[in-house]
Length: 213
Image (cartoon, rainbow, N blue to C red; front, side, top):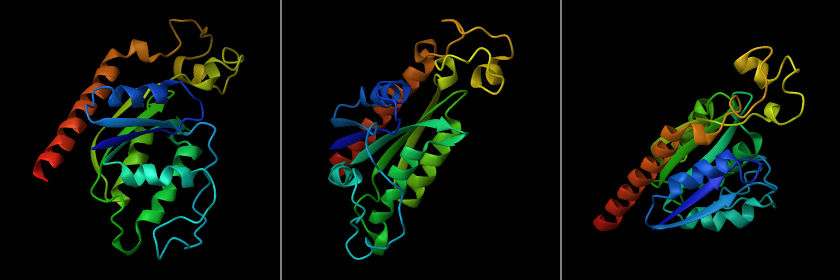
């Protein structure tokens, strides 16, 4: 049994990566973590080249991930919230799962999944997006977790004065960016434990599958 953890954040080493790894941390079967940061993964171009063999013909970094996706028994997929929806890189990655669906393709159907969302306020819209992709690909969603991350407005240099930024939007005009006002996963221990509990739940489901076969 193997669980593939995917972080769709373009920022390596930040909150999305961490939350996916927290889920993986309590799984006792083999796990692998992959960051999509720096990878070139475009959208599905509807060329229908995958119809006959369930293999996408678009030549980019998704090709190197295909075998990992096929070999995994479960997925922990995390993404950040951009404009109240899943970010583009994660969307393209999941959109390319279209290659597995044709002619009742069984490459990923029936496998298990966990959805992880990170947002400036919360990651709930992202979780809903990932769950939709799971449903279309017949992946059984074991559960989901969402947490608050650090919007770029906190680190861009203009967050305190920009009237359309996340600092003003979430906390109001005049808010100073301090350690106390800056969101952090360390301030959300309940979310960390929720992620770890999802890992335990996924682990138990996988062991149940193994015992039944």
